[in-house]
Image 1: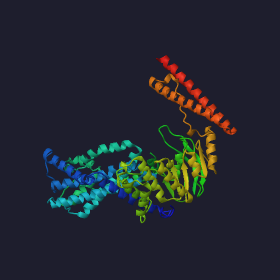
Image 2 (image 1 turned 30 degrees about the horizontal axis):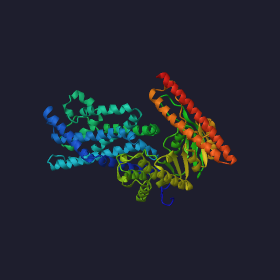
Image 3 (image 1 turned 30 degrees about the vertical axis):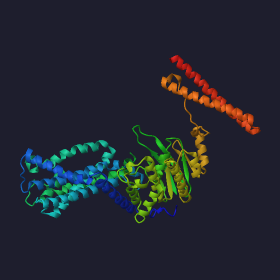
Image 4 (image 1 turned 45 degrees about the horizontal axis):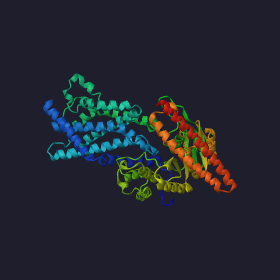
Length: 270
Length: 309
């Protein structure tokens, strides 16, 4: 039997090598699970944002009237905002369940709690980016003007929103692993976040004296900046600053990673 | 080789938590298979988890030289919505296998013998099929040290035999650290032993000594696992139904014992060998005692029944 078994490659794989092997394996696993494991999983992945965007547009058009946005068409404006917000939201909330969902995998000591978290963040970003590109393609075919005016700027803003989600996601994955209630609270506040981030209602609707409080929220910066890159003539409120968003993204990411190192064994053990 | 230095471990439960393992110092040499014994909750599995690197010690450290497996036959890492093949691929990739991936998959498939189910989602498997897959998977890798937590206790008869055989072949050129309550298995597989008691680990060069130390510590010289020790329920706690059931089973038992006694008498009459006679006499005595005991119990129960009726 000895001759037929596999040599586990070099008993001392370099730690980076181990991590890379774990990431590739987990990436493939997560992708398969997300797209193929459930019946119609891929269909819902695309249809869900279509449906929510449809509902939001319906609400804005018929219930809370007024489709006029200064310097941008309403439907593309809405799609850009919602896609940006969903990217952030999914990158933040998906990793929270990652440690719990992959508990069984910690049998293999090569896998650390941070691995499924990072992989989920990455997979989520890939899927969302793919859907956004699909929207742009289909939108263009339907003569909805979804071609960005500053493509590179949009990509940077997209990346920034993603990183903001990843930072918070990594941090919250540890926090909710240690204190499960945090996970519930975060899920509850995602809906209010949608409302105060200027996704559905333009931030310019907010009275000037309150706009500075709105700017405390880093998501507003990301979404408005992306719209500014998307629509050349769009006007937002003053004070949109991507450095502020990156400050949030990097500090939460750093704190999250440090906490993952500190609490690795506790997250594994529970 | 595995070196354990000043290892401490405790779990933080709602009520604090005592040390499960206290100041363990061990060196497990290469090529020596070790059996771990101790009572339930002594920390055997904890020690195994620490050796396997699935858990981190609170203090001290474990130095692993060589490739150490995950606990053999552990099916925890399978994702239910994915097929057996996909799960096997995943584990192989985690362990850095790329070129020989298809060979490894074939090997696992051959060992597990679950046929077409290999391409079905794992959550459609029975527990036996799961165990087969998990076991085949752990044996497909060539580790220096295998760790096993009651792994040979799964599957049906034929699979058990096969698993044990594969296991023993493995032990020829790799070593094994196993936790088991099956003393036969331990004696068969292991040379050295570790006895864990009150947070301390004691090393024995011979597994028999470890088992003996365990027996002495627990105050049991004989192997109790083979006897079925049904406890007698106090009469006051019996309700009518269980009483009826017990009476019936006792009656059957008495009949059986009576029959055996008759057979014994007959055998006594027919043998001439002296040693045989002595042995049969002894057996007859024990049968008689058993018969008396059950008759006494039967009477008690009957009385109790009449009183309560």
